[in-house]
Image (spheres, rainbow, N blue to C red):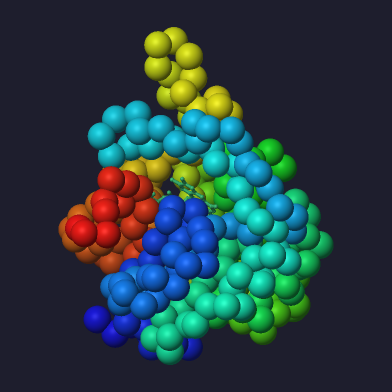
Length: 272
Ligand SMILES: Cc1cc2nc3c(=O)[nH]c(=O)nc-3n(C[C@H](O)[C@H](O)[C@H](O)COP(=O)(O)O)c2cc1C
């Protein structure tokens, strides 16, 4: 299943999207060493400073295969993350996609500069729907998306992959802005919403609101992937609701060439 992606010949066209399991260096290294099916390793989103994130509960399954989450961009900060990533041994046929976020253009550039020496590419989280002032707040504005992408591109010499939110009226417009800013590929989608899940009359998540992922977002994710693929001429990493080989074929038909499988991994063990 050799796959060409941004200058590398990869072992397979699959990734696990940001924040699901590849949150620590030893886990990423285990994927490199033991699971060739995952050609692109996407890290948890990394910001300028350490963040504890929200109190638990941070993830809730509101119906089979469907989730809300509000982790709150938990991460050790760019400096510590760079030390951890520096210890990784990246095989020739895998791609380390380091996801980054910031609260301003300057913060994106700062984190990008710190992380780029340890990455095959940088994914720009312009799309988190539940961390105030971060992610989606910036990714809904095409001018800001163009500006952030261009600023990061000018600061680093690795490929840059903006990750878009489905929570916009016209995702093709945002994708075009990213391409104009110099994006090398686009990832879509981040979580939908945010929404709430209540149990016994009270919200389950400590944050109240959380981004929606899993099977139910598949139709929106496919719509977004096909609109993006029609609008731009760069590769699309498609994710959102994939839980079967047929879902992967759907994303391929929609124009994606790398496929992210996140929520569907919940409950799986290393024996499966
Ligand atoms: C628990 C959890 C944490 C996530 N953390 C991040 C994150 O840090 N950065 C990001 O860009 N996306 C994050 N996401 C979104 C996923 O990367 C993915 O875009 C989304 O879940 C849709 O894919 P899925 O339906 O296969 O899960 C997170 C999703 C979940 C469920």
